[in-house]
Length: 74
Length: 267
Image (tube, chains in turn orange, red):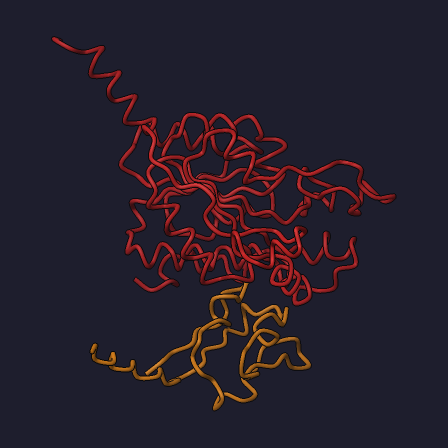
């Protein structure tokens, strides 16, 4: 019998760096976030409305066409 | 090295429109380069003209911004004179397949070790939304207000037929897959073609009533499927993505070195 692999510890969010100077408010990050963390505010910029729900999948960071998101994990 | 270290941050925010897929391609490309742990000094990016070709201004590699459609010709020169460098050639669909169509097929035929990225947004964005060889039958563009009657190329089939030894397709939605495919393409020795389907919300999206950037990215998700999937059998309209060709054939610079050796034998 093979031993079960030790589970990787889940990454924990340290900080969501949102570069508002680079963000153009296209909304791709918010639309495809699996836990609905991000929103586009009335100034057409990204905002972390529910940062506590972030699972650090980094899909927003990868999809952002403006390279404006950096998900920092612990 | 962090992804940001490969950027020329002084040129940001970049000039691409909000929601333009080219930014996502830049993002994926940098992830691939970072994962390979390559230094900026061993990378050369050669681009032509167009929205997509502006990418070479944003990366802190050796970069050349050259003539429309001729990026592969310049890249061939760079690679032959310095074969130890890794040469990347990002092109738009018009740049690669209309203006540079001949350079494209002949670079593929020679199997020179260059990575060609075809950022296919199906339109000429920079010049105002004219239809490109990838727009496809029945689409609208500023130069096809009563719908386009030109059929499009299939980049994958074209590259295969021209002799490229690595051919892949991915999209701006499948970002992890994109970074992975670009990484494989860079590692491959020979001519690699990666077609990335991207969105142009400003022209293609607006002219074809596809909605904004989010809806267009969703379209990429809904209308593509991995190679040989069951979904493709049920719906042949779906566009396949993945690595179509990966084979080993003699590489051009190696063959050229052999010619030099033969010619200078005994001297």
